[in-house]
Length: 229
Ligand SMILES: [Zn+2]
Image (tube, rainbow, N blue to C red; front, side, top):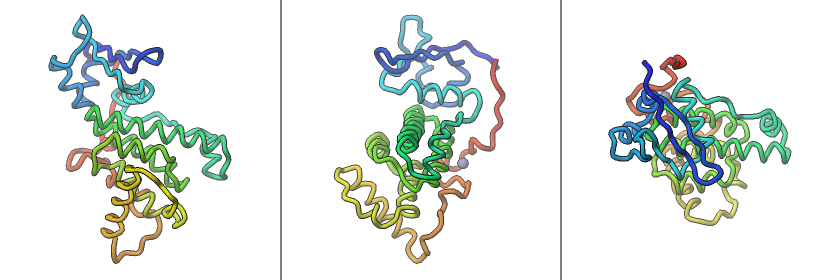
């Protein structure tokens, strides 16, 4: 099925970009656009554009690609892979940028009510977080201020702390409300796991749906998509 493209204007100022995405792809992938296309939120003079001034154009590009193809294009670079194998500064910077980008994708998906995109972004995050045993410091703050819990991304960050962090990282001095909330969640998770031996990766790397937010709905992994023309 084909439909007319809708212009989605993302970001502000010099960073602003306009994406033309078919209405069908937007509506299939996002409850936000479903509501927007009912008319009342639509902006612009022609009635065919939707502004998203507060969002990240790069994350939206990943969403638009996902809407057509059903997967997130790989972003984990060779330099990050080198960092995961052996700590080095360029690799650490790349790792932080890439994890931050995937977290941005998840946060955008949360706003757009795009569960499948969120779950795919989360799956893309699992591998580097698991292998590197750490989460860049800025990610916790963004996740705990930009999302409402409980949700899949918070569960993943908590399990990385519970299963992967050594005690010296847990005991690091961390100021701010965001860490207070994180460690409340970590304490609750330890309680939940009480009586079991906390070792290995837990559910982090088992390929299940523990961190997905689709509930009883169908997992995006079970769907196949074809490129639209
Ligand atoms: Zn799933």
